[in-house]
Length: 91
Image 1 (cartoon, rainbow, N blue to C red):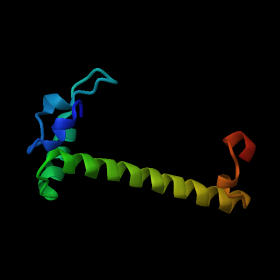
Image 2 (cartoon, rainbow, N blue to C red):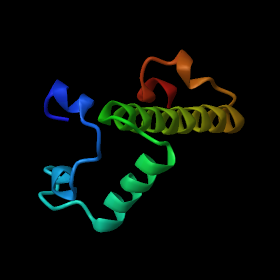
Image 3 (tube, rainbow, N blue to C red):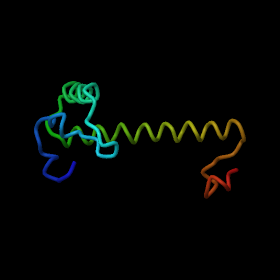
Image 4 (cartoon, helix red, strand yellow):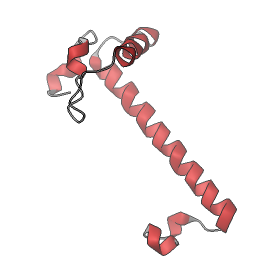
């Protein structure tokens, strides 16, 4: 998403628009096909819908990892790591 007006686009951009600038390589076909499947499955009408879905999936995954880590630390050490300001203070 390089500009705000892209949220209003009514179709998934071409595979070229998903170029990975961090790795300096094109988007793999299987990843793009997955994006197309998500677009179709959820009957998305605009890129705003795709963006929000992607963002929500990312946040939920992070929340799951966070909760799993919290449970793991508590089960092994009986400590709630949220009561510590830094990881070194937890250690």
